Image (cartoon, rainbow, N blue to C red; front, side, top):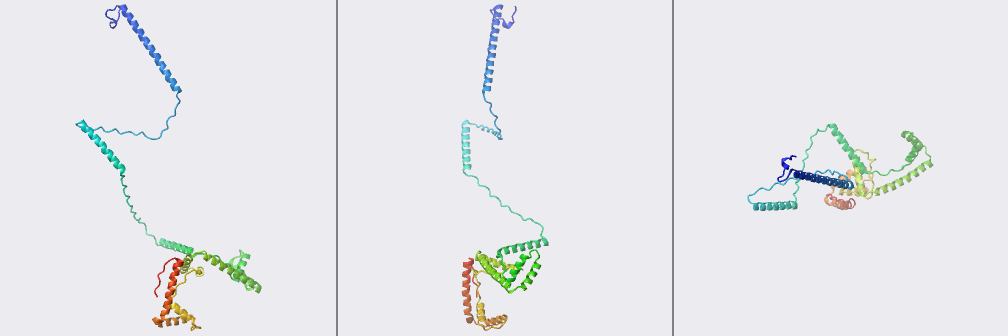
Length: 330
């Protein structure tokens, strides 16, 4: 039997060579079988471990993106190694110091620039728009004046005819104001003495109740508020509101105005009785002429009364209304 050239060994016969080849093949088969058994055992143990391990839930995605780090710049090549090391260390120290300084001293915020608002150029208002704006302004002023003027409590009927008219309105409700007033006037004319006395008695009681109620209402407001209300009522009267609708509120706490020297002279002359039976207009003309004929020394007592009354007025204004007033010159 011939053998291949690479199996021929020097000094061995052909039979010896065949025996050596067989032993080699048997060893190879034994090694391969041992390897296969070890690999099978390894896979079996790994499968058991994975089966015993509890299945974990997948992590929830937080939405954060993974930060990518920038690669550091390579240090520059220097001629000498020692000089390069010293340079890098000094640079790192400088950067650390600069970072510490920047942390310790925060930068000042820049001041916000003021925005200049430019006026929008619009169309000019027409005459109709101007009239409407003026009318609205007038209505607003009247509304504020009415609020300041205050509204006193409603009065009860204070005359015999008003009491009768009130009773007729209750009896003839729904027949119209004209019919009620005609019926009440006709009934009032035909009243007997007893019925008239009865209505007069009710009217007197109502008048006393009205005065008592009015005084209580006035006292609920401070004197300053009553003073401002009277000023608002005077302004409403000047603007066309009837005076009977906005009469002056009567309050004894209000400060009386100061009188002039001529007023003191006029009161003295009228009270003397020299002008009894003379018309008031003629008497006033005569008193005015007498005042002009008086000398400075003769006017001095009346000027002193004016100065005294002015001091009283300034003091009361300060104590009641809590405001200062400059005294007027004589």
